[in-house]
Image (cartoon, rainbow, N blue to C red; front, side, top):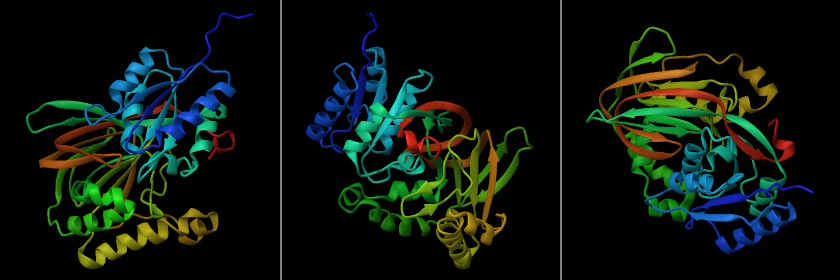
Length: 328
């Protein structure tokens, strides 16, 4: 006989992106089968995209937090779970499903994802933490699980039509990409990696990644590993139209196709930096911009920043994955 209370799963859900009735039925069934207590439910909103309700779920004693929504919901849940030791299960919804893709989780099997939430194992992954300084000198701190960026990628997100995105999914970004590529502005920044000497750079795009796969078979950061305790940094500055073609071929073909297999990596040879693309690794990255620039975290725009300070927290987030995916 034991006085231990049964475990409780808290479901943080975006009502726009989930079929609540089907989700509720699946979660209650799997929770009961696992011998857990009745699950608790917390709805996100425009005012609280997940941080507040997740904090409340933890206060209410959640043993597991199930994030049922898009990338914004996952990032917000991770931000509040950080440091608690409570695990997070992903129920992929929405357009990107960035973390689920990088963990090679199934994206279109809600019942299977729910089952894994209760029967799977935990995998510890790194968290990126980023302190943003605004033009008025105010500062805010956020986490990201996939990548943060400035330049073309941030402008692409800023230019994306949300109504079109809801109807057309990932294809909606094409229009935004075209609009962003027409933007002639470059990023002028003073940057520093770890304890190296600061240096100045002029680039079109800065990407700081915890992992590197995007929808559309795009492997933006080919060496990024979600649990290696390192950031992968990409600095992009294509030289004219030919430079953009070289970047696209390297990202979409060499990284996205060739390097995905052992034989392909051997064929492609050692990855080399060039004038169009430079890759580095670090555990801390700081940058100061010559003017305020749009910044994005995990596919969401976070306004304009004049500077930022980012660091990695190794193994800071436990994600529930199927047992056979733990070593993926």
